[in-house]
Image (cartoon, rainbow, N blue to C red):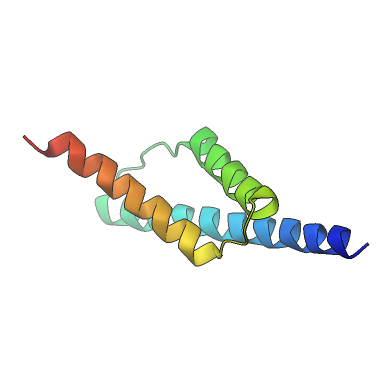
Length: 88
């Protein structure tokens, strides 16, 4: 029973965390759009995939991982990937 409650709690935390990440990404995108006055197409399928992976890690990963750690590592990975593209 206690394991089910813990799993249920992690599911809720994962969903809330996913919502926060998506909300943050969407708000940052809309801020950039307002500044540029150009409306780029949001990669909604990719954002949904990100949210799904985020939720899976929160609910099924062997160890508990904090939302902030997942988000900062995701951002770090994006920047690292971009940096590799532009290095000679």
